[in-house]
View 1 (cartoon, rainbow, N blue to C red):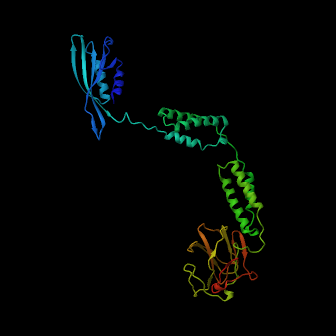
View 2: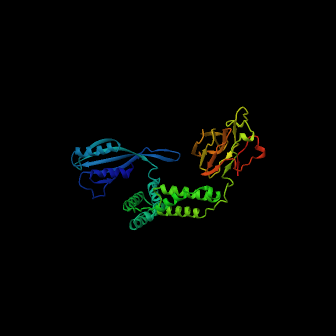
View 3: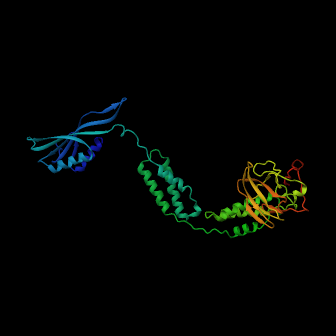
Length: 394
């Protein structure tokens, strides 16, 4: 508390207050207070004062012993944590009482000279939030008013001489303008998008080139994301719908039969080729003590998302799944005659191998493209892989 703040506290007594003395002939009626600085015991170091310790004399003059007023003054000292001692004197020549208080006032010497930093954190947060709002979502009158208030708030934010009160006032104006916004509820029509998605999902990748089908696949994924997105605008829906339709129009028919990079084929009977044994599905080493035969690693095409297997004959087989480091992560088992099963390719799967006893699967489907195996099916075996019969990507 400095001297100005001390004077402000004394004024709460609602009697005349004056520093040192009233001008001659202008003394008010009793009671009144005179205060003045007597001396100081300041705390200082490093060539500057850290705390001012002022010894102040506060004199209460009254025409009689005013216990009630003295008590109010002493309570004021108590509530403000001001130390004091007092003496009392009766001035015969003036016929009045003098109650003198020796008080000690301590305050931070630097606090009054250091500029207080203006807190603009909340104002900046409000401005950034309003910047994310879209005019199309609100009635124009309320949104226009908000923009006017926003412009003033931005000026306050960059004004280095603005006061804390001006910052608070700007925050309140922004909040009031936000509360007056009226949200426009727009019904988004996804009917055409739903129909186009349904139709595209009836198509088969077998009928089209891998390149054109991959463009359609990406467009379909984006369309399905927009369809289930509750926050998608009509513009978002129209955009993905147009891209899906464009990808559909640009589909190119395949030349027929097997397409490079998509389809797999192999002979029906590995045993019929005179091969016995095979590779251990876990170690990759030969295992000549078993009738089980196994393909080499077959890379899964990037556009593939599911595999279907079906048996033909009495023997079972497995489709083994490996990650991109060719470490086994699982398998799907197909057993007995006539078994048919479809499963989704795990995201981390990069390769498959097919293993079975005496007989290959009758058919394998990758990415909904069916590849039949039979005695009339064309097939090739790479010369370097004749020992273990490698299935080929063609």
